[in-house]
Length: 68
Image: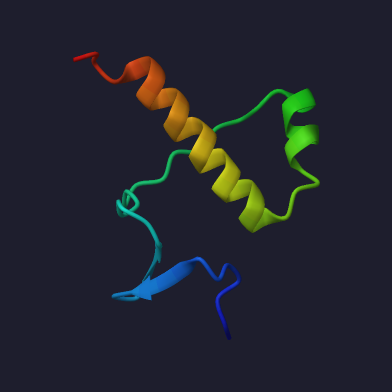
């Protein structure tokens, strides 16, 4: 069976995102308010995952990374 997301690659029996940094081995799961979930739910799963990774990463860097 082919990859559902063509941007993913298979490395050592695990999926890895094609990009500069590998994914963490640990997963963080969150529950969202119903109104937010309803906005996200119609998105295709691969598109939703990529979008969530992008916006969470941007927010974490902007808000939590120490300023130099």
